[in-house]
Image (cartoon, rainbow, N blue to C red; front, top):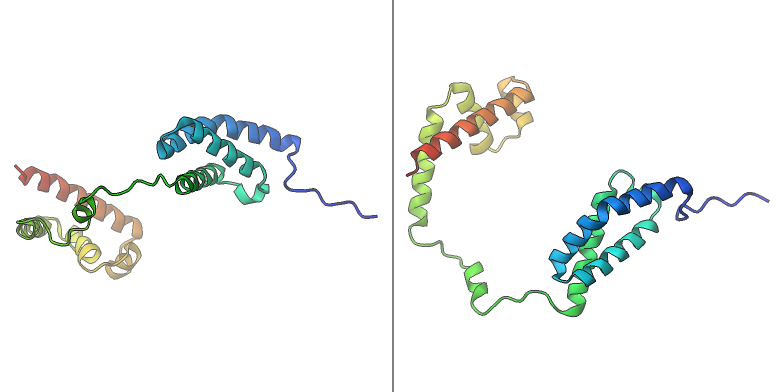
Length: 179
């Protein structure tokens, strides 16, 4: 008779300490997260308890390396299930949909956008030539860092540094021009 393979869902003594540690570390953050979603601490505790029950029934390889993310994902999904089941999803108040989905920009928005774009283009013209080149390749032409590196024969790290430096300078100078 061949031995029966171990059930990956059975918690052995090595996994017990891992589970105890995960529960101890993540219980309070999960309860806070679920409470914010549900606006009810008792229901949040139920959701977290259900999340841990599901966690303990998972094979170790399913959650290996990303247990915290798995817990928060399942907790969120369970909380949303509770909200859906109870029909307590937040409803738009009368007129709120129109404010959220208005298609026309507010008056003067187009003029402000044009002025902002003109200012930024002027500031780009004041950057050193190598920064101007990578900024234009990235933001005007949509190239990736790798593509810019091939075009300019710079390293990807150098491209990233130039873009970061240029953007920081543009931010500073743009902020200085605002009243």
